[in-house]
Length: 102
Image 1 (cartoon, rainbow, N blue to C red):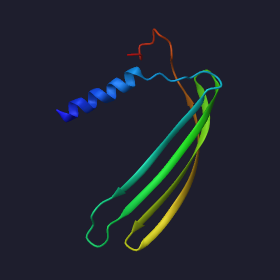
Image 2: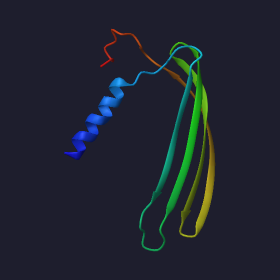
Image 3: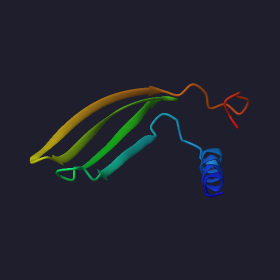
Image 4: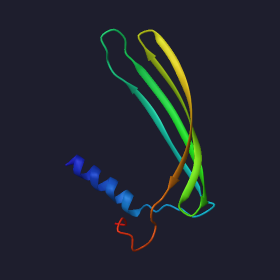
């Protein structure tokens, strides 16, 4: 029952969300990850943060970049990483009569 309510909630959010995909709009996105599990010797741990931003240079076409930082600890090894990731996206349709619109 809990799973059904969760799925209904997710589909409702997608149905009512509308993106501004016009020239000059700003796209902000990001992820936060944290995890751990119980191992035999040590307990591994990892965490990461990766925000990204983009600008619509024309209707439905956005370019931008993201930066990610992370940390991991496993069996006496501690390390981090830094990732820079450029991106470009093109949104196929935003018309009212689109077959992709719910």
